[in-house]
Image (cartoon, rainbow, N blue to C red; front, side):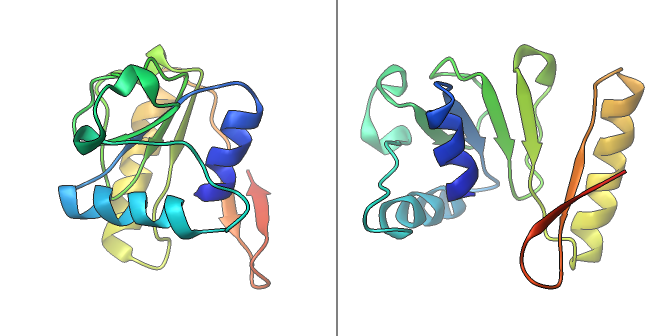
Length: 132
């Protein structure tokens, strides 16, 4: 996720990252502080104050408090209306049968709603491959 968020900022966009719990929000906050020493990503969550000041906002609720253009859904988090975002990234563990089933259900919902979808899967060597 840090690389996706770095690309988001490089594109001049803001990100809303929805998580499944406060614990996960804090975990991701820690990751963004420590992922790469020379690649700090400006971010915040409810404990950090004003979301409008944060280009990356990590939260449990679906309010787009930092006026983000890109939405990142983790831990099975859902948003009622992804059409308000330029892009929505659905991140899940493909080795977790429950997470995979839930992601497939959301995929169908997005497809039925007329969204343009792209699926990427991590390959054996760690790189990402676009699937059809």
